[in-house]
Length: 258
Length: 191
Image 1 (cartoon, one colour):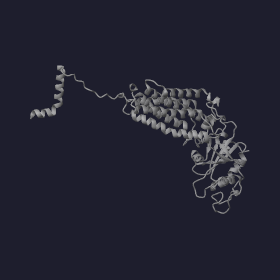
Image 2 (cartoon, rainbow over the protein chains, first blue to last red):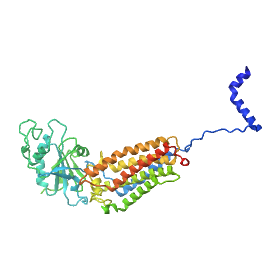
Image 3 (cartoon, each protein chain N blue to C red):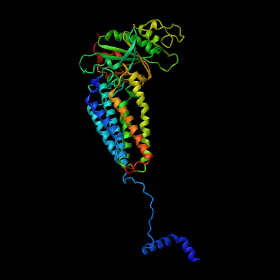
Image 4 (cartoon, each protein chain N blue to C red):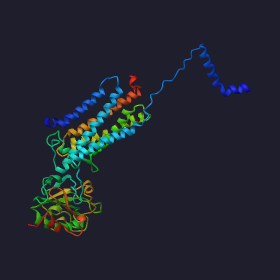
């Protein structure tokens, strides 16, 4: 019984022992068939090496980019390059493509003469934009020879603030659109006929704004005004100058009016 | 058009694509290695061309023009990379997207090239193919944009096209690698 138990638990060792004896005796040549081994990867983790190589490639690329063409800081804040846009614009006759950067003079340097740019964001149904119409008319009459005026029309997500090209044209040109009844038809949230907008007709481009332009310019409400240097960099941002109005800013930056 | 295509930098990029394609189609004893080098080479051409388009983008934004690429004719960059409406995605220039995307592809290909027998190699090969294929719809969108949407369309931006072709070449070479692996020809001595 002990022998049976011994063989049960040590059969493999006994079998190997017998095989070795056979081998040593030269009676049977043992040939163990091995399963072909799968190729083993490297002991070190090459992913770390790859990461370092990639990091080096990216570093070289970014260095070259920064040396050859450093990226500009783009945004509506003072000192930043104004966000460019391309959109349809109404010039008093028809709608044509307008690109903000086409008005920039990239060669301009501080102290030189050049055409400054006033950018205004409005919603034709916004009451403050309605009254600011007169302010803009006054600014234009004073600085039209040295300043380019641009108005970007947007649509705020407020009831009765729906607008269309006809309303924008009427707002700019001061022509009849809507009624003086507070019926939602016309400018100023539909309270007024666009013909009665304060100020004179605006003889500059009215751009058809979009949510993308609003996002780039970080517009949270209207009206909004900014003054750009001739080279397109923001010189004055309404949000950053609560103590100075647009007229004062124009006097300070552009110089005396005509 | 011929002037735009005769740009020395563009010619260097095109030679890079030709070399990568050669590595992909050449019949050699080390076909797996050759395909790996091909995918890596396509990804390198892609990342460098993406960086070049980013340089052109920065020049266009800051200076309004660039001597790095023509801005007239059908084959040009000015109206494509210089179009503020289409030259970015959520405010991020396409060149940056290209650099980041090709970085991922380079990492995966480099890992495979350095250790094709690692236990993660099969997964990484699949990731390479999926990541490459994920970029193809963006290539299609960008081609449609430059042919139909940008100012004065149709236009073809040659350096953008180099990046697009690099991605397509990468996907093909990785697909061939995957096929080779599935056929049991992953190791060089297995055909």
